Image: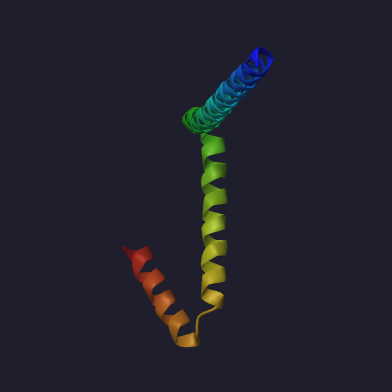
Length: 103
């Protein structure tokens, strides 16, 4: 009977230990995920700051080239958008653009 009680006590202790170990592992995993998410956020923030600094440090030629690229993209976007318009809508868009340029 004594051996049986000892065996049952050992099993109960093992179960408690396993449960504690599982809880500890889950907490560690959650901690690591939080740290990784924070690291990713910090990296994204740092990348944004670096880009802002680059823009502030841009030479006039670089700034001009950047503005030209943006203008080209805008024209390409406008062209794609107007390809889906009917002739009347295209005329209205052209009139609208003409008004915007004159203002």
